[in-house]
Each structure stands twice: as C-alpha cells, then as structure tokens.
Length: 86
Image (cartoon, rainbow, N blue to C red; front, top):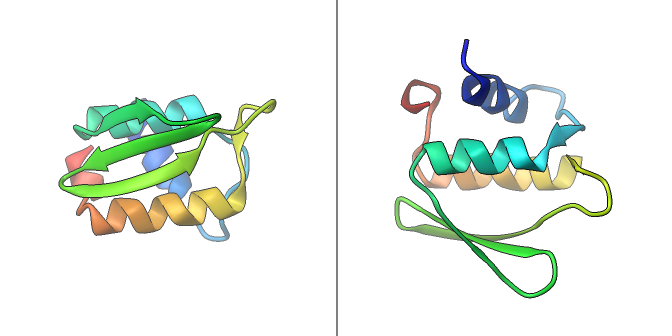
C-alpha cells in the first residue's frame, strides 16, 4: 500500500488519529492535484477540485492535531477525494 493511501486511511480512521505528520498530509493533497500556497504565519491555502480551504501548519511540532484532522476530512469529502483516487 502506498504512503498516500496510508495517510488517507489515517485521516479517516475512527476514532480520530492524532500524530499524522503535516508533511504527509501535504504530500497526499499534492498527489490528489491540490494547489498549495503560503498564507500569513503558519496558514496554508489549499485549492482542490474547486474547493478552497485554509489550514494552519502545526508548529513547533510536526504532528497534526485531531481538530485539524477532522477539518481535513471535511475538506477531502467536499473536494470529492476518495480512497480510489489516491
């Protein structure tokens, strides 16, 4: 199984996982065709399949918090990304 699929599964795992590295999430998004640009501070703007989102890159830790994982789930669903696309 590819790394992006593992990341996708971790995002949609119940209960919500903590500890998914943000760089893995960004790599997943890029592989799905997302455009990622830097915002102010730790903000990251993402456009995927016409859906726009703004997320905060975690710092100083590398792992994404549970609330951000829930938001990423919603974003991926709204953008129409599913397991078979990865």
